[in-house]
Image (tube, one colour):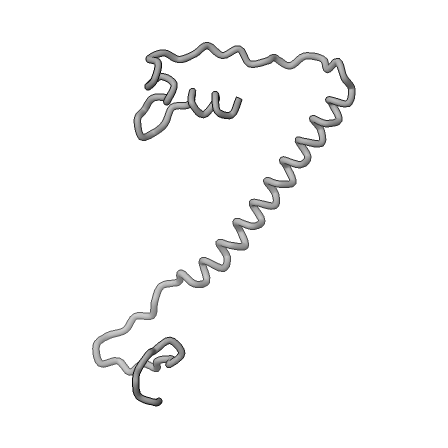
Length: 100
């Protein structure tokens, strides 16, 4: 179903779906409609899957916030310097042949 959905979705690069690009028509979809479950364990499984997806979404959002917090610290604008300003350099990553 995932592959079918991807191949039937419109892309921004071509402004048409991969399925349409290959076959020149959009296939008819008849997705299953929601009906009463025959197996009660299926409802429990569906509830479990929804809760797992919510947990994953919450975790990914937390991770995104944490990463952006650390990235934003490093991506601050460099200090404004002019020609002839005195600056201090760290020799940690400065490779020179003379001892400092």
